[in-house]
Amino acid sequence: MMYDAAREAQDMAKTELPQTTIEVMDSQTATPSEGLVALTAARAAAEGKDLAEVVGVAEKIRDRVSAIILLDTIRHVYRSGRIPKIASQIGSALNIKPVLTISRKVNFSGAVRNRKHGIKRLLQMMRDKVGSRPVHVAVTHAYAPDEAEKLKELIASEFNCVEMWVCEFSPVMGYACGTGTVGAAFYPED
Picture 1: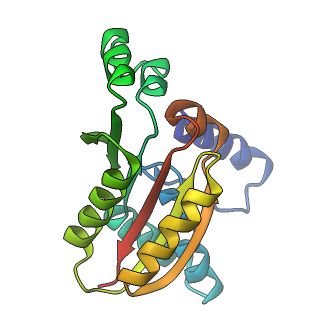
Picture 2 (picture 1 turned 180 degrees about the vertical axis):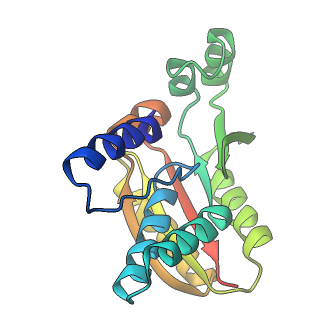
């Protein structure tokens, strides 16, 4: 949806700003992974790289960035139309906390019974993808700043973070994932 809207805006700009070159790239991901892609592209532009080089850098990061998200409850996933109502009701009754990964698409990667186990799983999944390489990280949350700070501290204590920041989910992502959701988007350096 957003990609299509950006393409329409690009077409409109061609007539009103014919001397301006606009490149639209599908991030194929969601916040905060998009933020990591955008920041990398902005840095390349600030270094004086031309548009083709900036797009190339952004595509390279887009292809490497991952996100792992721990939902506090499964009921919001039903609300967004991703699972049947009965699965939501059973999951809520059992206090299931889904773990989702985002790497070009959203994937259900398992479920845990409490936040502590979910954070352990998230960290293990990061270890498996990053190893000992330096990593760029964006910790994210949906109305859970204290939990996000705790996750940030855990990640900082275990990984060689080149950069790390905390951000809130957008309202749309907060609606789809629900209050209490925490996660991390990241990509390792080469």
